[in-house]
Length: 99
Image 1 (cartoon, rainbow, N blue to C red):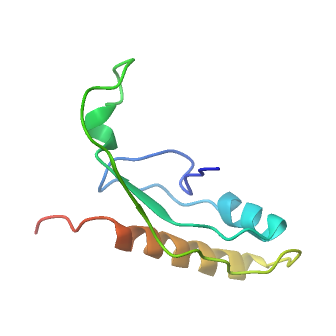
Image 2: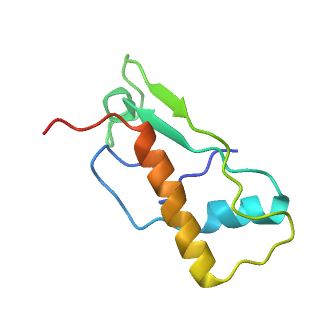
């Protein structure tokens, strides 16, 4: 299952406040979260067109991330910290923007 921590896929350089739902699903199920970064999605499927355009999309996967064991009940501070760690792991998979 794929879940965007921000609640929606976003263009490179744009960010929304990440949500904890993806990590909570991981904690409740005991399954690790595998960070993934997508590149080229905006060019292949711009916001307004109904159909995708020809192009290539690159997907990079990071190492599995399991901040808790199945059945753990993390508190708000633990969740916030883990969401930050997850977003950093995703960010490291993306290409660097030109300076």
